[in-house]
Each structure stands twice: as C-alpha cells, then as structure tokens.
Image (cartoon, rainbow, N blue to C red; front, side, top):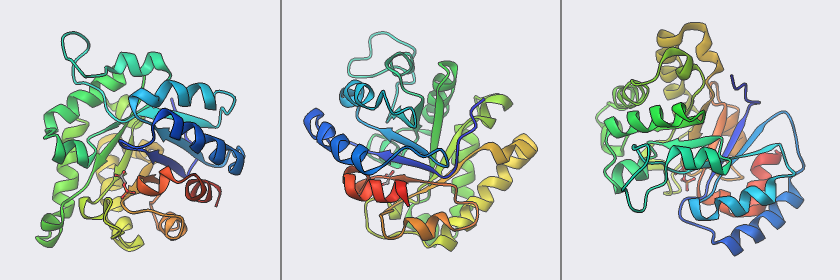
Length: 252
Ligand code: PGA
C-alpha cells in the first residue's frame, strides 16, 4: 500500500491550537509552504479541530492528516472517546499510537497500544507507533531492550502485511518537550536497532517502513537530525505549532 515520500514531517499539535488559532496557523503556514512531492507532511490536530483543518487543507493534497489517539474499542458506551471508524470517516489517514504522553500521563499499557494499532489498521488507517525510553532506562543501558519491547508488543496483533504499512516514531521520553534533543548519533543508533528488528519480522520490506525521530526538534536542529543515517522523518511537537518554524522545517 502506502509509499510515503521521505522525509516524513509530522506535526503533533498535542492539546494546542483552538479552532481560531488553527485557522491563523494555516493562514501563515500554507502561505509559507508550497506543495512539494519529495517529502510527506502530516498534521495531527486535536479531534475537535480536525474537521476545520481538513476543510482548510482540502485543496492541498500534499498535506495529510491524522488524529492523536483513538479508543481500543470499536464503538459504544465509552464517554469522551473517539473511535478509529470516526477518524477514518472524518478523513484521517494516520493515528498516533503509544505516544509517551499517552503511556505515561494516561497509563496506556502495551496491550492497549497493540489493540489500538489493530483497530487503526482494521479501519484502513496507518498507525504511527511511538516508542522510546525514559532517562532512567537509558542510564541503565536498557534503551534497545525497552524500545524493542514496545515495538514488538505494539505490532503483536498485526499481520505481516499490516506491519509493512506502519510508521514508527522513536521519541526518547527525556527529549520530549525538554529542549534536550538526542544527538543525530543517538537517534541513528536506535533507528538501526529498530530497522534490524523490523527486518527480522518482515524481511526486505522493512525498508518501506518510515522511521521518524521525535523529541525537541526545531528549525535549527531538523536538518542535522534528518541527515543522520536511518532517520527518515521527524515528529515535532512544540515547534510544529509555530507556523513559521514549522514551514521552515517542512521546506528545508
Ligand atoms: P516536542 O514533542 O517536539 O515538543 O519535544 C515531540 C512529541 O511529543 O511528539
């Protein structure tokens, strides 16, 4: 299925930008960033802002959209939740799954991450599975073990064809929102481990799976991170809600 132009540049707006703010953001961003086919740009607005953003970027087929979370459940009495079917029906192509804020602030378990990936795939959407170690785990030398455990459990309910179609974002927890970015070397080391594990699962086709880095990416460090071996995209939080900075990251 999906062949994505690389780099993949993804904006995780988190719980930022009201409808009015998202509209001003798009005024500024769309003016500054002209369509290009040598990269993929994905926006992950909040669920409440999603439809407005979708209508606004509709003429820009180069910009695709995702949601930040879906329920593990198909439908029913789950007040406050959004389903994968709703995301698909609303025009999303991607879903962030297993973001560290979901894992740590909302107690999402590996099993729930796996269930969400399966739910997302069942509705024809692409999961962007997020993995990453805490600072304590890194200091204990457990980075590879933690990341591979999250990867393997995250995809455990997917068949081989579905695994081939996912995206992975490596986001060290200690680098998210802290201003402390992994070095390009740190990012590459972990990406190589992830790529090797994926190759063990889907063989040659592992190359089709884009590996993104995330954690305090900004317009200044984006280029050197993207130049690092096996870093094929960026998942950007804070810097992605500033339209000037985000246009710079996308346009470089
Ligand atoms: P940050 O967030 O760029 O603000 O560190 C990245 C993310 O959480 O996806």
